[in-house]
Structures are given as structure tokens and as C-alpha cells.
Image 1: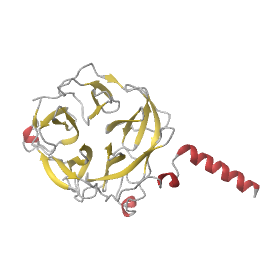
Image 2: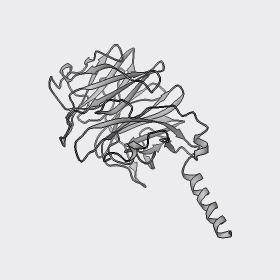
Image 3: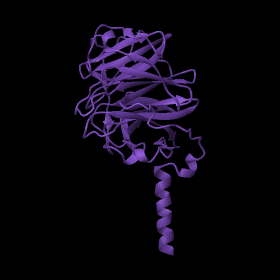
Image 4: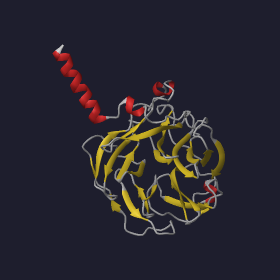
Amino acid sequence: MIKIFKYSLIFYFIIGLSSISAQDLDKYPIKNIKNPLINVPGMADPHMLVVNDTCYVFTGHDVGYGISDWVMPDWRIFMSTDLQNWKHVGTISPKDNIMGEGNTNCWAGDIVSRNGKYYWYYSNRKLGTGVMVANRPEGPYIDALGGYLVDSFDPTIFVDEDGTPYIVYGEKGYKIARLKESMIELDEKPKDIIINKTVHFPNTDKNSLHKHNGIYYLSCSGYFATSKNLYGPYETKGVVAKGYGLETNYAHGDFFIWKGDWYHTWCRYQNRSKDRIRDSYIAPTYYDDNGAMYDDTRHINKKYESSGVN
């Protein structure tokens, strides 16, 4: 009996240090979110824009069924006021930027609101990151540069609390640079972001950057690192949750606030050994007193946890 009691104390001590308990999570409202987020296959690389409590999710569009490569002819915009029901309200076409009509290399992008306009930062596969601009979240979007802002891909646009915008990008190592007020020019020479990897952190693209309670969170797929300095160095902390593709290198996504609560949206392959078709997911995100971050995936239908290949 004494041995059992001792091991029980050790178990609960470890749990208390490493995670938020189920009882703690129950203190928070769990929204009845449907997953996959969009009930249309092939919606990948989600990034969220919130305008007056209305959510606009910008996604890539996988169409290459049975092909072991990414075939992505455009980007899609969906709108929701409850995180449950989504309406397709816009399409961004490569014919309206430097990529050209018929291009199927519409890789990941990010969206930001600034100066009464909406800026869409998009990837032309690995060639570079361009910028498009619109007067409304749903578009239409037109090319703002006629060239590339940076010669890399999968950009994240982060606006700090003082209103200063930054771009983060890169593969096998991230760079960060302040943007000018125009949002289409760099305001400084890009700097390397140092990540001190004491636990696993993917060495790939698919970054996201956000800030909570004075701490910067740099993530790649479901893994994250933290720093109190925007430029780093960052310390790796682990994964936000297990299952649903979060503990792979491929869960490109975004963290955002809606009606005062934090959420995480990401994508997962249906079956990566077969093709490159992905779906987008969403879950509430919580933070403990030590700054650790957790996704609450309890409400995701269990059939999605074991289906497909991550």
C-alpha cells in the first residue's frame, strides 16, 4: 500500500508539471466545433483572419488524387460566424499574380489586415513569396508587387502588440524581418532565428508565430518553442497534443483568438502514402501558468484519429 501511494504521488506530480489536467480543461468552454473544419476534401495549410468576430479561413486546395505530389491550382476563402458552419466566399487565382494562369503550385500563404486593406502573402511552390491585396477579406485580390518579397516560401505574418509587422519564413532554418508600413517591403535585413533544440522540433518549413501573455510562440506543425524576445533564441517545449497529425512534420497551421479564446487550426493528410490530399482541423488551445501550450482535442471525432497516414 505504501509503494502504491508513493508511485501515485510521483505520477500526479509529473502530470501537474507537464500538462493541464482534464479538470482544468473542463473549466473552459469547449465549442462544438466540427472536424474536419471544411467539409470539402483538399483544404490545406489553413490560416485564419478574424474581423469583428467573423472568421475567414484561407486555405490551399489539393486536387492531385492518386498523385504523389502537390497539385494546388488556387487558394480558397471560407467564412464562419460560429466556427461550425463555413461558407465558400472567395477564390484567389494564380492568374491574378506573377504565377500565371494554369499554375498548380499554389503553396501555403498567410493573411493580415492592415491600413484598411487585406494582404495575402502566398507561395509559388519554393520559388518565392509574393503579396496580393484586396479591399475586402473575400477579395478580389490583385498582385501588389509584380515580383517576390523574399526568395523563400510558407510565410507567416506577425503583428506585435505595438503594431509593428514582421515576416517569418524559411526551410531548415527560419528568418525574420520587420516589414515597412506599406506591407510589401522589408524594413531590415532578415535575421536568423536561433532555436535551442532540447526536445524534438521539426527541421522543415510550416512555421507559425503568435504571442500570449508576453511570450512568443514559434511553432512548426504541432511542435512549439518559446522566447521572451521576438528574435529569439527560442527554447523547444514539445508538442501541443498527440494524434490528428499534430506530432508530424506536416501539420501546417495557425493560432488565433476568437471571442476571447485561443484556437489552433492545422491540416492533416488523408493518406500521404497514396497522394497529397489534406483536410483542416481546429481545436481550442490553452496555456498553463508556466507558459506551456495545449490543444484540447477531446471533442474531435475519434474516427479521424486512426484514419489515414500522417
